[in-house]
Length: 263
Image (cartoon, rainbow, N blue to C red; front, side):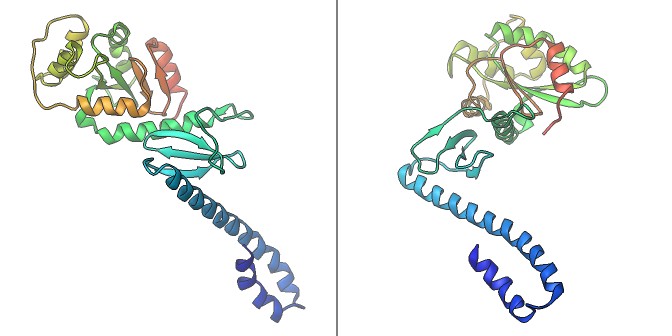
């Protein structure tokens, strides 16, 4: 910070010390320079922290380190997961930072953005999508689903209601019992069907859709589920970045979505 001020301000000041105009300009210079220098100091601290963390944990993938609203606490992003660090690297933890004045869960907001970025990277060509039959979809939810999950079937029964409200439903296929399980075979058969939407609807209704095999994105869906912290199905992400664990009635989902803004 000091070198910035000397280099930019002192040469002018020595030539115009008695100038009234300079006395007026100087506070403006300082007002501009101090934030610049503070930002430079922050970046230097972050780079040093990143270097120290790499030495301590060379196997860790560091996507980004940035400041938080709390002095002396940093946010660490590794892949699609979010942690907090103290500058001495003695402590790292997961938890929520909540801004009390606005009742904003800053951690949930930031984690939601990361999760949605990871989901979008999968690509809609690798999803089973139920679109509204009439009109353009206004909003979108993305659901990790399993045909062996009763609450997933219950949610699927309400997809027409969601579609009527202008909400499209994008499915990612997650066999809870793992690759090679009966549930995996059903999900694979859904993906390999000529009409994936109908096959998914039939399978969730308990109908036999026949066994099929082909190249499919299910392993990608399972890895994505791990990255976003899935612990059970259904797991719903709204386009506002909100994560909803478990079943919610359509009317509650619709109200929540309508009262939010997409990312």
